Every structure is written in C-alpha cells, then in structure tokens.
Image 1: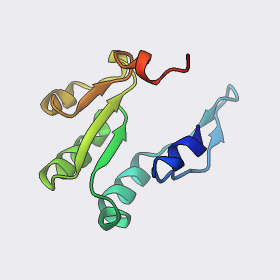
Image 2: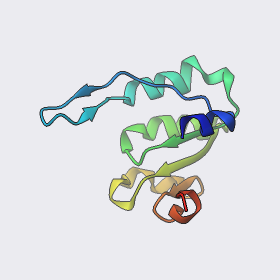
Image 3: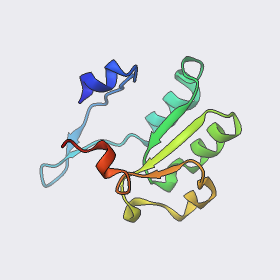
Image 4: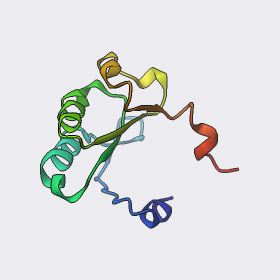
Length: 105
C-alpha cells in the first residue's frame, strides 16, 4: 500500500509508536500533524488531505481552508466524526461510503 501511495506522488510521514497496556500500537500524532501541515511542510504542497474525524484538528482545518490549502477531510466512519466538522461539508468524505472504490476486489 505504501509503495502504491508513493507511486501516486503522496509523501508519507511515519511516526514512532508505543504499545498501550493491552499491547496495541498507539501513536499521538495530533501535534505533529499540525506542525508538519501548517509550518514545516506548508510551502511544499498545494493542498492537504487530512485523514481524521477528530475535532482536535478543527483549528488546522480552519486554517488550511482559509489559506485554500484544504482539499479533503477523510473521515473513517460516522462514529469517529466530531460535531465540530459540520462546517466542512464540502471537504468531508466518509470512507465507509467510498469503501467500494478503495477496497481490493
């Protein structure tokens, strides 16, 4: 999957993870996503696709939209959508609705 994304000119940024008490990998990417999107990589892309339904990114979405750099917010499922994202109706895409387009046959 990573090679395919790279072949479409996506730049992938990986972050170290830790394991929680149950052994499940966990990574807190909130601050890093904002830092990379709004400051470090800002001049290196035309538009951003943010994959998260988390309302913690509201300020990032708002900033990128104002700067005309927000292309889409991909939300994994309705349960993970924050009510703060109601304002971004034109940018939102629900992965569960697009499942047939992205799943392997």
